[in-house]
Amino acid sequence: MKCLSIHLGTLALALAVATTPGMAQKDQKDQDKNRADRMANSGGTAGQNRLVREVRHELVMLPYYGVFDNLLFRVDGSTVTLMGQVTRPTLKSDAENAVKGIEGVTRVDNQIQVLPLSSMDDGIRMATYRAIFSKPGLDRYAMQAVPPIHIIVDNGKVTLEGVVATEADKNQAGLYANGVNGVFSVTNNLHVEGK
Image (cartoon, rainbow, N blue to C red):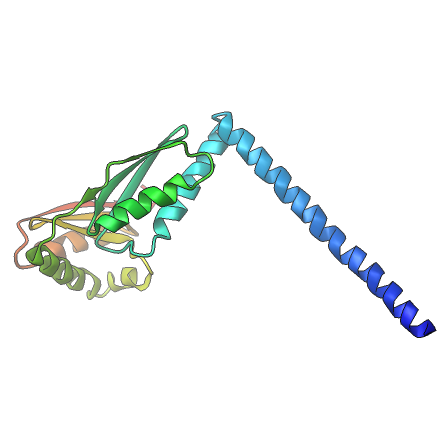
């Protein structure tokens, strides 16, 4: 019986010690959250930067966001303006709903364009994808969950959006997209990292 009471006492002490750091961490997280809320509400750049990071994260994590969609946004205080083009109407509403749920966002202006349904455009999308991402050097961009080169096709007109590592990659992507059958024009809006 004496042995049992010692073990229970040791167990109670161990539980007390184990929960104390967890409580301290919880208090620290609450303080950090309150500090971030104050910055966001004060209109400071730290609050603005937090909103930008969270909006970007939410948009990139959308389940149906892919290489044929282009989501852009602008943060003005607590208002987020969504822009770009998507192939599915549900992605437009999903993006708005995801951003509305971010703490500190009071208004969402959804200006995302839903691209028209077109079997011709779908064929151009796939052909352009193969033309760009099957080439040595550019194939490394296809390895990511959402490739950094986005192919937007609207009535036979191709626009390349996103970021590439070099000017040569940008130029190659534009040339390969221009060589796809059925493409009326190509606008190369790719940005080079660091510029």
